[in-house]
Length: 277
Ligand code: C2E
Ligand code: MG
Ligand code: MG
Ligand code: MG
Picture 1 (cartoon, helix red, strand yellow):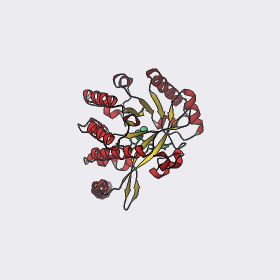
Picture 2 (cartoon, rainbow, N blue to C red):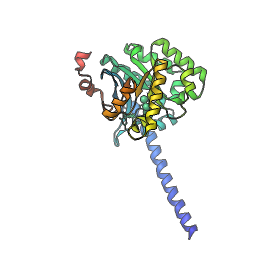
Picture 3 (cartoon, helix red, strand yellow):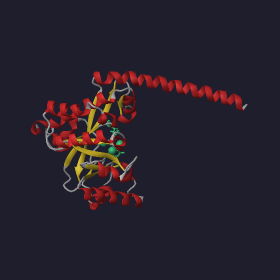
Picture 4 (cartoon, helix red, strand yellow):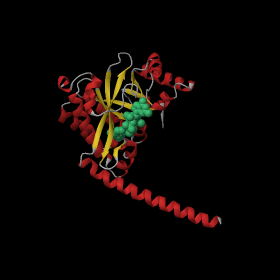
């Protein structure tokens, strides 16, 4: 009967939920040890100047080398880390590690993703200063990537933090632009150095004329405001050519390189690490 099926359905559902809960608890337990046991790694993806084809930036992207599961991607654990109150500490580690790497590879800017929560926290600016001071990195080589979530709460604090970063010489990029709560008001109220056009617009360039129109408009805004513009998720030469023709300044994507461990940067940057240092 329908009733029995319902009960079966419920039993199945609750077994599934139980499994998901166990699994989730295991991830939490493992994650608490990951930082202390050195299982977190940074990989670096090149950001390329569309005119000169030079690598002008590296974006630090988090990887978790889980002892049993192998490499875990950030989308699978950053949410959990945030919920159990671990993401700010992870962010501090990322800042230090990325700055230390940047020192070994002179030239390109180092871009670091910072969660909305961490950016808004009282400790964030101290962590940035600590990472710069303890590594000796020129602040002009550090770029902080934030998403629109940062702009939704506590405007005063956000303005103060952005101002302090600017004073230090650290630049700020608006990541994933065009998704979420994008508002032109934000571009007016908050000053960024760079806008990163979300990958979804670049991906649909080939078969969706509206994406071309949107990208053209965003590029025009960045030009009018004197900002750099980075297009994310560039996978084909055709996409790169179109973006370049429209006046986009930078691109990032599998066409130029995936995020890679530090030891692979020598080939990317065309130098040996010793020669570079
Ligand atoms: P994001 O900051 O927008 O980073 C870009 C993501 O797109 C990266 O995924 C990158 O590997 C991927 N990507 C780059 N080019 C291409 C392409 O051509 N095609 C495709 N299909 N994908 C491309 P990843 O490394 O999995 O990171 C996902 C997100 O996790 C990041 O998005 C960022 O929001 C977050 N994340 C990564 N590292 C950190 C971190 O250290 N701290 C924080 N708070 N978040 C991080
Ligand atoms: Mg990013
Ligand atoms: Mg992005
Ligand atoms: Mg993203």
